[in-house]
Image (cartoon, rainbow, N blue to C red; front, side, top):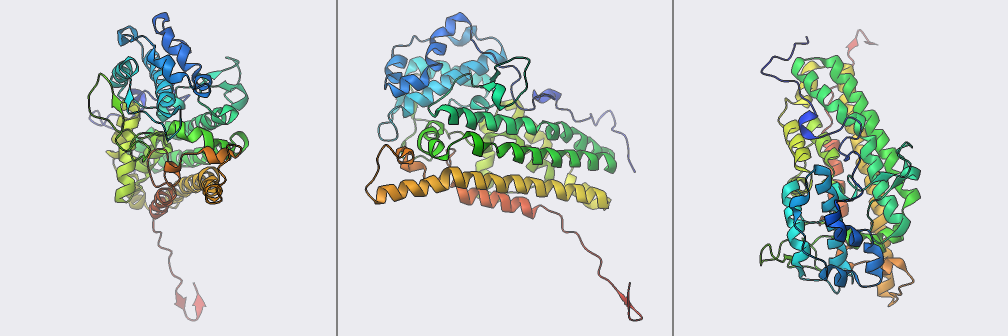
Length: 423
């Protein structure tokens, strides 16, 4: 029987977490320009790709003035500044590939980058929150939110494929919005004992997860695997668990010792973390530790949302207690759709990383590492790992299998024989 939420049990809401009912975790209407004082940053950030190809990005950054961050006032200004400083940093570190990295980020970049990062609660490295959530604009402001009408604010080497990679990932985030909006309905429904509301909300979440998988399928149409593996991937790489930079990176003017940060990873998206906490998916120790660490690469309000979902009454326990056929089916479908999304992600990783990596190894074994083969440009340090530092395929399969394990064990009544007749 349904009950009401008391005054001491405030209804769960997305409002405190800066999550939009239209855009979800995506930053609504990102700024495209910073105040004029910061134009030196934008002049470089908007031309990072050309400067990398001309091998002059490092020299341009070394000549850049050290700017004060106190004139950045709004959250959107800080997000654009972090994005601009992030792409400059990735380009500075990886301009010459894995064999000629740097040990120190110069103070005129490191100091403002650190200060902006501290104000946002983000690390000083390119994250999913930068490259995907805050790196978009519509070509036609009144047009649709789709591939043809979306454009990056800043980019990295990789041409159309790098745009495709970030934009498809953005559309996966957008497809998840109905699911994110339904999470409070599930939590409040459990608190009230309202099985009907919970069932309906879980069905909405399942449908959104299917939409996320469909959006992810666009990756095959907009991203060339050899370009992703051979060109793009190094610029998403960090300086933690990376043999190309085993000591990490010194941020000059911040501290003398090197610091280590992981590169971009799908695990930095808040979406699946929210679903795991809601559905009670428990990950094994190593995978769980990596996923928990990735939460430090999210906007702090989104990280708090995940934590607060984990503190709510157990949905899984509620479903088991209610023993409703419709509710149980809705829960099981949610887990199945989440498992299908993760399985498809494994398919994508296989095509964009595992297969090109095998081709790169084959070329090296044959003594043929010609630059004409795009995959041969890829860093060898990342062959077995994701850009976030995980052992990628074993990690993804383990996470997928733990999702499967979270399905409820439904006892099917056994038929009884009465007088020789099945009943």
